[in-house]
Length: 192
Image (cartoon, rainbow, N blue to C red; front, side, top):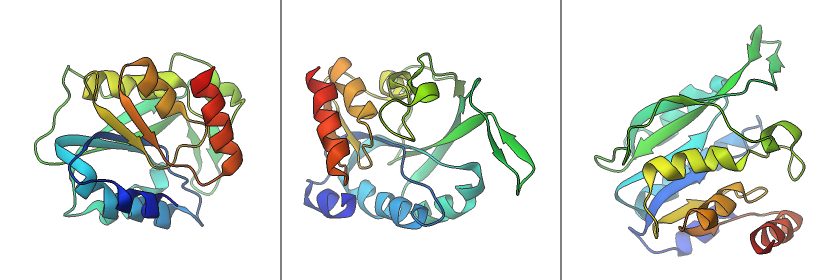
């Protein structure tokens, strides 16, 4: 469980928390509450937290972070090929918001556009996990918000996308995943 693992990590040692928490109706509250409760202690001053969130949950999620971290911006991830339909809202979903929080006065190390389109196809075909994101999603934030040698944490590792990007970009990656089969898959990806 990410909350148990995060409690064991030292304070002020993470440069970036980058994650795609589960945000179904049954899971979102626990997942984002764990992020909001545990991440601020773990983050260095100036560190960032970026979390994907369903648009319909933005009010609830931002309330959980109120007075814990500073909302910096919402960065839009375009999804040019996969469009979910939210019939109850009358909306075709063509993108996803990434909520960007900072501890203190963190800013991007290089100018970061507030929208992007993932370059690869893993977010389209999802061969490893039902909510898999392409490595280019993690690369986007890692390249703008970290330096080589920094520590990146993903408390909801899924298929290991953040860890693959961290390794590729010379960062120390820490991941937490509750599903044992996903953990085995992550190890294979990192060793492959």
